[in-house]
Length: 85
Image 1: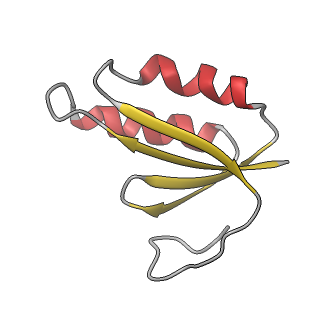
Image 2 (image 1 turned 45 degrees about the horizontal axis):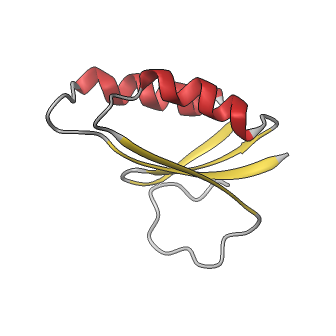
């Protein structure tokens, strides 16, 4: 199982409130997901990086930004939105 850090900036030019709902649902679909900061999630998943990309990219607008990084451990936690990961 891989652990991914997913961070995003949705463009305010084209952002609709439903964009967040769609993105959050897609991230939660990846596996065990924790929304730890406003635009950062940690996800434990059996999916390969290309499978994660295939799920997230189709819902992103051209102006949006997204970073998906694979990592092994959390070194510091302070005042997170969720701690269950």
